[in-house]
Length: 72
Image 1 (spheres, rainbow, N blue to C red):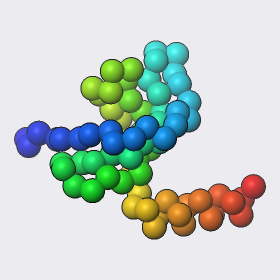
Image 2: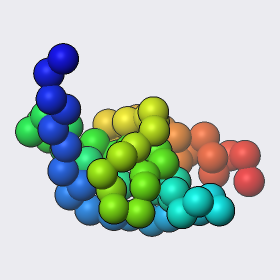
Image 3: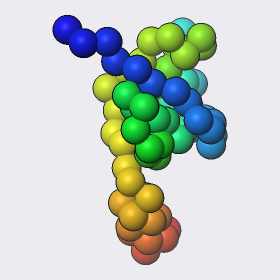
Image 4: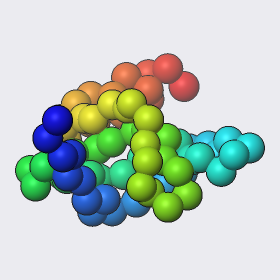
């Protein structure tokens, strides 16, 4: 299996934290040296392990923001 390369370019915020210290974060992440995307997933405190998550392009993030604005 190929090694997954990632770099957290910018931490934008923490959405929640579990009792075990894992945090659901919104970050800008570059996966496999590609342009960074908005990324929501749980990370361990050292940022060496992660859960499955979701990545969004800038356009998708803007659309999500508009949808959420209409909800609240």
